[in-house]
Length: 77
Image 1 (cartoon, one colour):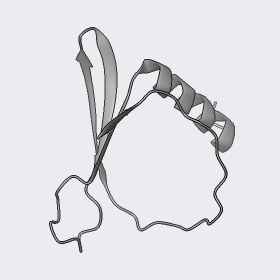
Image 2 (image 1 turned 135 degrees about the vertical axis):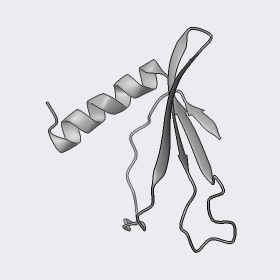
Image 3 (image 1 turned 90 degrees about the horizontal axis):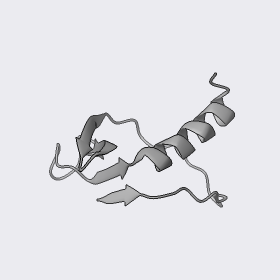
Image 4 (image 1 turned 90 degrees about the vertical axis):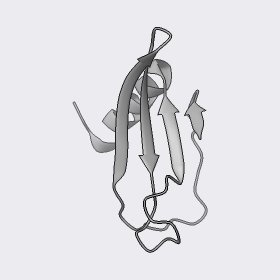
């Protein structure tokens, strides 16, 4: 589990397309801070299907930074 504080641009040396999965999305407020949490459980073929394998949280600043990247990369307005 991790709370992303900031994003650092990097280059991938090997690009692959991952298998599609569903993610659980949570929005909540804690100690006066708004947060978004995304949990993934990986593929259904895993040894323990449904068990959370990754959990990331975004605070307002990280969410704002990601929103800017999404707008620029995908052309969102």
